[in-house]
Image (tube, rainbow, N blue to C red; front, side, top):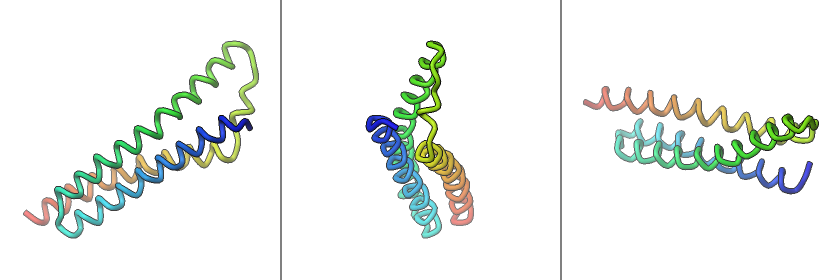
Length: 110
């Protein structure tokens, strides 16, 4: 694995972790009745999530380019990449959960 690939993967992991933390914070704020704060945290999580998607798209582009050149893209696949993918998927699930909890707590509080 190249140093450049490692940096990209850590960018994804860091941004996805920030996203997940924001979504969890949104659920906690909604539970406490702070619906507006919860919605702000979802937006913050979305910004982190966007920061994870940009380098991820770069990796997908690199892999596609290697494939069109007939080269092996196996060098891109590693445990760190799998971890980065897992972090991105889990933050998407947390976003959906946060939005559902916010709606629920908003209805309960009404």
